[in-house]
Amino acid sequence: MVTLCGEIDIANISPVEHELARLEGVRAGDVYVDLRAVTFLDVRAVGALVRAREHAGRRGTRMRLVCLRPFTLRMLEMVGGFAVVDELPLPTDVP
Image (cartoon, rainbow, N blue to C red; front, top):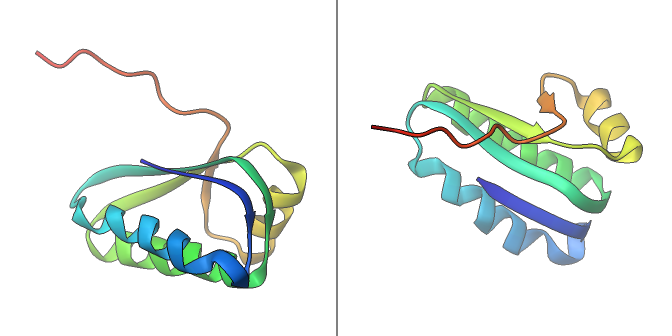
């Protein structure tokens, strides 16, 4: 899981892209990007999420975004194709 916060725009996209790159090690199942604390996304940030989603899909992984803010949801809806949920799954006990 990657958790992002604050304003994400061209001025601070490099650390965001670095965090999203951490997801590249996941080879199957779901990966989550928590956007609940994000207050603003610009087009470059949405582009980074699109690229991360495409990389995940090529590995057989589904990228799910956790998002509640109306502005962020509208930005993601314009691009389309994102799996957006409103909460993280509960941890499960693994034997």
